[in-house]
Length: 130
Image 1: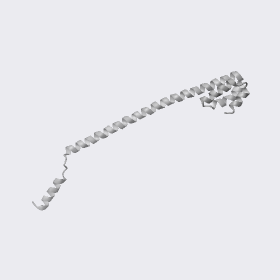
Image 2: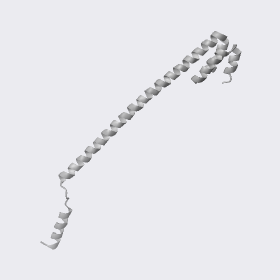
Image 3: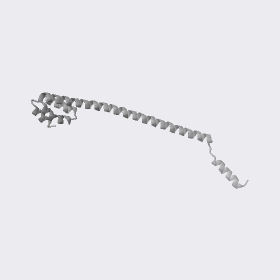
Image 4: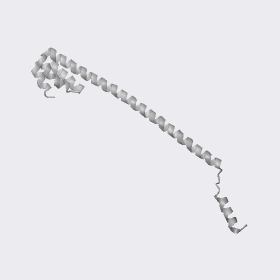
């Protein structure tokens, strides 16, 4: 054999992979399995986050609905009291003011004003300061 062929043969042998093809295929399969597991984990986590967001949204909606219901009930009660105690004209003038209030605490203060007012004009004067 010539020197060139011998040198080429030694180079070719050193270039051969040290691991078998089966080992490389197993490593690729392992990586594919890991990728699949990660994708499934991300998918499950996403589903949990969506479910958590929906649950929080439902709870928040219920709480807001209850608060809005209490506010609306307080408005109706105040207007009925004003109508009963001071008449239709005072109730008509008070309604837009009361309807514009979205604070339950403020509506409760107005309730005290209604009870303490000596006449409709005094009540309307206080309502106009809001």
